[in-house]
Length: 345
Ligand SMILES: *Cc1c(COP(=O)(O)O)cnc(C)c1O
Image (tube, rainbow, N blue to C red):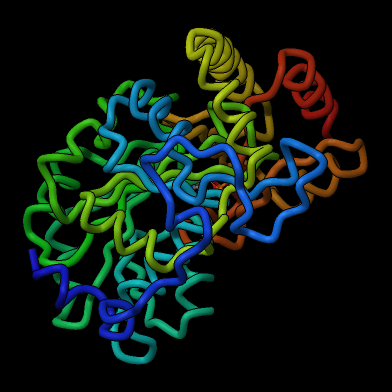
């Protein structure tokens, strides 16, 4: 791995971060807070939240089995994605490499930050060889994006190839594990301490049933986490979100049960889809959605919208011609979709 000093943008490396009132005291038991110009009335929401979300991180450390000092929390994974560009990629000079097709935000954030984005096409099984990703890199490549299980294709990227990329690349490899709770593969986040150039992304938005609260996570070395903390907004995760996340994380077994239910429904949905006349191919999935190739994606999408049923039309995405991406819903939602598709002519 390149030294962190070489990887980080020079202005960020030398940045003196904003020091908030709540940053400057710690370790003392205090009870009179006259330091932050808050209104003294209206507890508890009158107070600024903990900028480093220490209590929540302790909880996440237990549930996710990652040390607390290896955790960054943000306003959705989207904040971590954007921070990776802002911390590591010099606009118009550095570039990033990513599998293609994949989650759209990596490219959008590259464009916003004026950083060159180099997509590398997956093969017909939606897999990739490490060598082809590494061949797309040059001395200005700072990040490689790998989403596994991948969105919109649904499949895990072969672990052996991901490890070869991590070992063969001098910059940072970002593995987005937004859907890893639905996969049988061991999450890579559990090995975060063995790979100093690995950043793993997680989110509360999918398996953890909390898309509305906007909480995303990045797992990485404490040195990388320190760079994120320097650049993030001081109070980037609000108190309501911290409290609701703590509550959701207090019952991981309940989430496990829901994940199992979704996986059972997924199996039934895929079997039913295979029998539909419009269905040409259901692609293998390790996530809570599946990609299906149909006879006419646009027409079927429009037909479903007419009936108040929204799926994701991916027909204009590379390698996904005539494909719809179907999220697994409740049994009754899934039945409604299947019923409508059986009537499609
Ligand atoms: C849904 C999704 C996320 C979640 O993003 P949030 O900002 O945390 O809601 C991240 N990565 C991928 C690949 C996703 O599909």
